[in-house]
Length: 175
Image 1 (cartoon, helix red, strand yellow):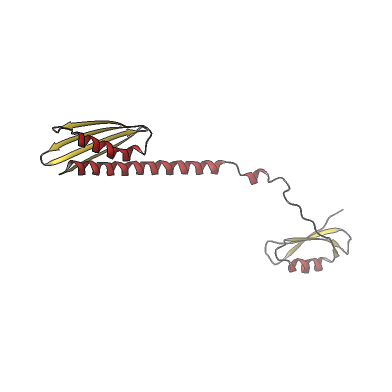
Image 2: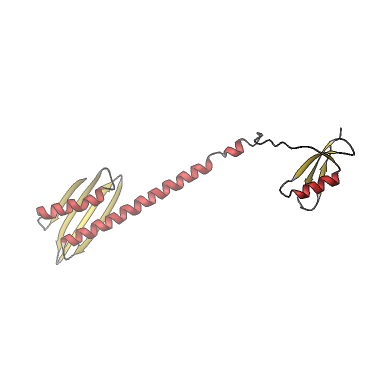
């Protein structure tokens, strides 16, 4: 991190310089490259610290005043860290939302294979009357239809449940 420390009406001592650099390490961990401009000044009985950080095209700024310069610097660092975390969380949330939107626009793989036969079931066809087929279908509530050989006609028929849930339909070939 590039750090520029300026003192207005205040001499920047080696101790203050080291303290600012050590504290800015907390901010530096969030970015690969960042620049910080630190302005320290005295106004009446207050010590004012202004820290301005530019990183990844984003700008963060904190200004605090306290009786003690070190306390003022600490407050600034806490404020900046909060701003950076908030911006980072917001950016991550936007990225997450964007990825969810792209997932929704991807074509549904099940819809793509809707015209294909995906399951084949084998079962025995028994000769019976349509009334017996209804009774057999009632025994298996999870089944919606039953294919059988109609004893009266000798043809393959299907009996199926209608949407009303009470009645049944009979499918019989014409030829």
